[in-house]
Length: 167
Image (tube, rainbow, N blue to C red):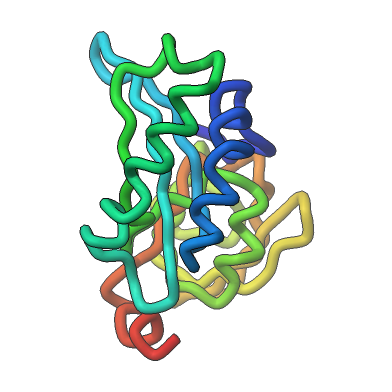
């Protein structure tokens, strides 16, 4: 899975519909994911707030989001709608999320062994993003990695848990 530059058509329609609901309740919309698992299609609305998301937060907007998604032309393609937390080990799936992730400890996976990295999977800190590449630092030093070489990025949650709780 390479980093996406935007939403697919279903995700884009859902994002436009649910963003006002999410933001009016004081949350941030981290991601909208439309994915097939087995025979079913899931639409996941992932939300966040500085002190973390609770089950009560998700249920407080679930009905409102469900009603908006039901109005969309995409509703017949969605088997399951889920509203949930982006999570401590959230995926960074989109290039626009990279700027929001600067300074975070991450688990980076690349398609190939990149110059400056000891392995294709490393734990490091995301220190910069310039639109075409990221800069990471860790025990191995510093490395610049082309966005096209990245297969996955996840927050390295427990290393940043204290930092997240302070925000």
